[in-house]
Length: 260
Length: 203
Image 1 (tube, rainbow over the protein chains, first blue to last red):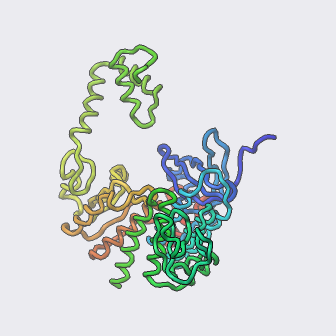
Image 2: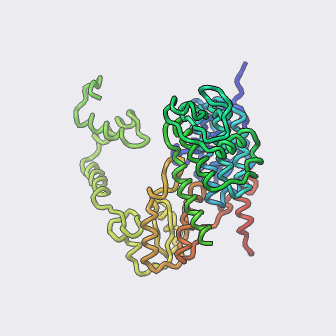
Image 3: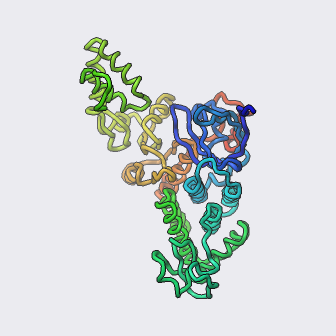
């Protein structure tokens, strides 16, 4: 059987780095092949026909040719450029954060269609609304789930008894919630309020549009963010690069709103 | 390198090693360049040497616009013929060369030396943004032109700068976005075409 030289795929462009004067190596996230790297030739040249279709965070239909080392992108057509994301600093920063998480959580050439759909839908939702915090939390929770780290939020992870409606404890190392009786049996635990637990469960069991309709308080949002971030930090063994930037932009946006 | 299989003269081995450190030059190219230099007339070799030393010794960063220059402040910042109320913000010194080539811009520059790239961990603190802001507070600037690249990171940097500069009461503009000269509509992407349509002009 001969291998076809060209193949087609849809992809979301996660990031890219310069290979030479005009060429770039792009990291793509595809529905059928997971994360792959491919070369886009000559895209820094003004006359490049490909450039706009393979810009970061664009959802495109691509034609690739098998290369000796990396595959080469030969044609591209934008499916969705998430245009309204690009005019808003906060939304684009959120989108970059989701792209970094996908990049960090996935190995190359490992198909994960639900994760692809999650990323695509998240970018789409980020275009539509302004309050992106809950969308990010929804994304993080489901990314964890599709990568095999779904937090256990219903029963205590040690004694398996259903959690009572009180302040429980989240174990980062155990990847789930401990009841008050078991909290001392694990290291790295932090208290989790009942409301936070409820929101986490809601996000875990609903779809993304339900997540955007949820009404929360700033304090609750902060607790959610800190909890999931510390879990992610433990899993990838470092802080995500874009989270620092995200915090800076958030502060700037809040200051702007206050002035208005 | 210590157990080099072939016995070569020490100066040659050393130069090969040095060439090897340059980007895009592998061991074979390094060898070829070295042996080419061996046969080169001495005065040419000296010129090459001197130019390398010169870029290290004579070049400084202009304390005003952060461009690489022979003098501090640089020739552009010193020039009395240029419009000192206009500052064009670019990513790197090569962008200044591009802007200067058009001969149509008569204001000053500010080089950021990079672009905000959250995924690579490059934030505003790693760029010369603080310098730009202190410059705007002391100089009599009327307009800032944001000329960062028109990709996602350049746009994010421009939006960030706009948020910081607008409260200072200075006019902030962005280079026009649309179709490049000599391009074909058929191959234009959605973002470019949308921008081009938004920014259409009467002729």
